[in-house]
Image 1 (cartoon, rainbow, N blue to C red):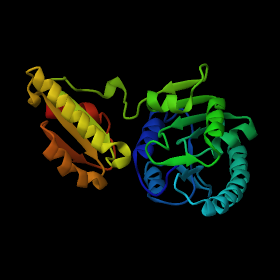
Image 2 (cartoon, one colour; image 1 turned 120 degrees about the horizontal axis):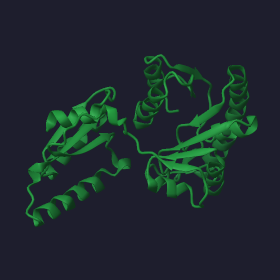
Image 3 (cartoon, rainbow, N blue to C red; image 1 turned 180 degrees about the horizontal axis):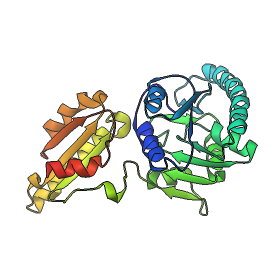
Image 4 (cartoon, rainbow, N blue to C red; image 1 turned 45 degrees about the vertical axis):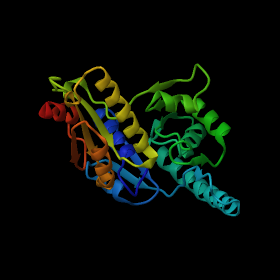
Length: 273
């Protein structure tokens, strides 16, 4: 799991853990200490540190650096597998959940120990972050297909990794809460965006689609005031806010905070209605 920052991957995992609290005893494995580790510990989750490496590399990575990186990663992950296998055996863990597509070590350990494995696919790698699996696309896709279950956060990501039918794959979008948390009376329509806005997330495309959407509404004689953008952002995205404000005819609300409160989306929409 990511360790040096708190992004959507962390928020989604926390949401998942909270939904099964009391039913399982989770252990979260990190490659080293970081603010994400402190974040999960603040919610009293068991966090453990065992150094391991991810399996993705930049497309522009120099060949002269690739071979040393590959050798180094294999040595680190070999040592990690021994420690993780021992940890799993001592704690009698029944299932491994890999929280990103860039880590294959969980799948490999699950196959070695003969336990269940769930792979949570959150990114394309190449299309959004210009990353590629060190072991190649064919191998990573075969590994994903062999998992006991696969969760993709969008249909597009699912189709990016799973081409054949019959795989136990499910599309579960992020930022989805129980209906019991929703208190919105839907007096008005809101376009709610929760996340970290940057080039990797397609900020320009989002603005272009907003413009097309607004043009379509105007052509039908519909007033833009009926729709509002609601942004829940990390502070790192503040630099993009003026760009969106000056290029959008839709009223916007910018919020900032450390976590998704319970029923956040519904209560927020109700408050702005």
